[in-house]
Length: 82
View 1 (cartoon, rainbow, N blue to C red):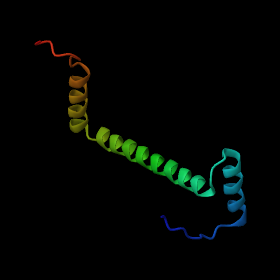
View 2: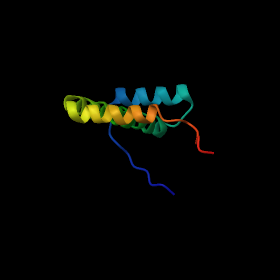
View 3: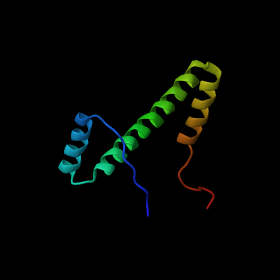
C-alpha cells in the first residue's frame, strides 16, 4: 500500500490540477505525475542535445562520432555469409 501526503500549493495551481484531472478523467496525483514525467523527458532530451553540442565543439571527437555513425548506417542489415 502506498503512502500519501499533502503538499501546499497556491489555490490557483490546485484549481488547474483539479480542472485537468476532471477534463482527462484521471486523479489529481496522476496529473502531477504526468507533469513530472514530462519534465523528466524534457530534461533528458535537453541533456542529450547538450551532449551533442559539446561533442560538435570538439572537431576531432565529432568526426570520430560521425565516422562510427556512418559505419553503422552503411552496415548490411543481413548476414551475407549465410
